[in-house]
Length: 303
Image 1 (tube, rainbow, N blue to C red):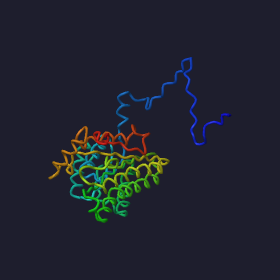
Image 2 (cartoon, helix red, strand yellow; image 1 turned 120 degrees about the vertical axis):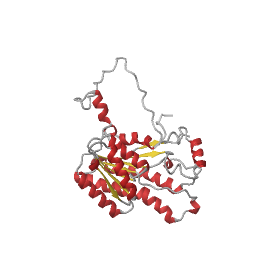
Image 3 (tube, rainbow, N blue to C red; image 1 turned 45 degrees about the vertical axis):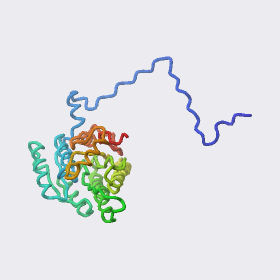
Image 4 (cartoon, rainbow, N blue to C red; image 1 turned 120 degrees about the horizontal axis):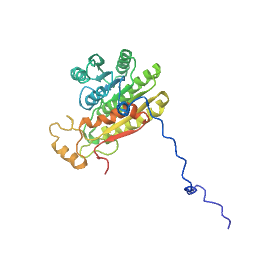
């Protein structure tokens, strides 16, 4: 019987790769980026955010405040904290102005913003962009959580979590992207805060609304990255694991903390553990990264 080839639908095997007898032609050494700088200067430049203008939502406390501080430490010139808590926002700005170094005070401001309010978000971003001359870094840390069995959720509570975690991230990112495109800025970086809960089901606490919302944030980042790459806007997300914050260390949390410790190979993280990935995604070192998520979970999702 004649050989008619592989059945329809099957893949043909590739021809095995043959190593040439002669050594390959040496490839040229890639050109240096910033050849005018010394090695130490190039190393520093990779993680420098000098001159950048940033907005941090949920930046008045917790993870957002720590990452806002890191932006200033790496050279961000002007920074706006968006939060619903004016009291905490004022204290955060005072703190950030001090750690930002000499001359940082006028470059740090607070905007009282509910990220679920479309009109308030658009107006606040417009104000900040006009004062700063544009925004090229956005960190979205505004988020809420609630531990409740799925059968006990009322639709209002469920919707509130999505309004803040997903819709709020969308609204602020959209407003910033519109301004970047209108000003024809050469590049910008948006970083969403997702969660390891977008990968695994939380245990022992029931967190269905939170987990599903954070899975949505993962795909929101990828979708926006695909739409805006032509405008020089990179969109990524980070997924923290259990972090040592007020939410994880409050009254009545001892039992949960012990369970988390047993499930997390590296234990419970510190908010500072997020800053390296955030700085990477916002600066020169991350210029070829978009549409991705970085898990910072101490190995929680390995098993």
